[in-house]
Image (cartoon, rainbow, N blue to C red):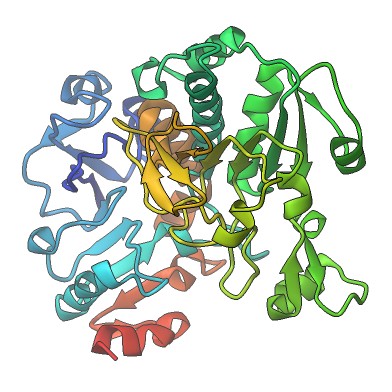
Length: 400
């Protein structure tokens, strides 16, 4: 078996990699019968020379590989017929912009294994960059608040060498008695909490957050049921909420009255109530000054997120009354950080984290036998057909 690591071709360039040079060397030791090559690139965060120094072949043409690994979508013009590809295809939610990509993969009889749907037998996702989205997103939230308040400055995340430098920058925080809301309990939420712990900011209970005053900055980490309640007032729990989101309404406003900063790392499921609406943001007691929307659902559950922002220009202002974008320091505006590719700001750290999971949780099934059907269940299409788990995409590819 011959595996190739693809050069990332999307624009703007994504500097992340599936496996670092040292991880490639480790793979060769763990799977001695495997041949591993890397496509040459001048944009990735590790140089060609770093791979070569670890004994890994670097080549321009890797079309003779059996399996091709990438991070982001491969442009249609570069797809090779009858190959097996692994990358984030961004098609499983019927994303309009990638419909033609899936159609092309079917035409070329490509086997497409999507990282996003690789799960173990317990149903847990095996891969993702969510942890570093949380780490960078939380840091950017503090960066945004410093710029908005003009109280302190932090170095931009993408200008930091690594996570260690980011954590060192947190010593520059100058906070008083701000209240901070955190949502999210998955990979993103765990990443956020790593930064919160490094910040030294005190965590408090929901009750104390809502009903107490403090002489220091504090934060609350909310669970889904802390800000959702049944419309009919009946008792509820998260299982009922996940099964019947249409029966619920948001109670998030009680937090927006008290908080200054919101770091949003929640997963939003279709049909769930919005955390706050544009009308909610118009209220005289809506207090949020900064929102770091890691989830970045446009015109969705966080009403102030009206567009994604970029690594080079990460902040914009949202004016609740006019519902328009404004300068983020404008009076009465909300400063919004909604960078959609946050892990790219720390590409080496994020890649190492991702590569470890590839080696430990995916390669054994791919190379030694798919006993738990991890690969087969995560295969969107093969031999020109949608796999049964993804037959729901039929109308999508037909353009219906």
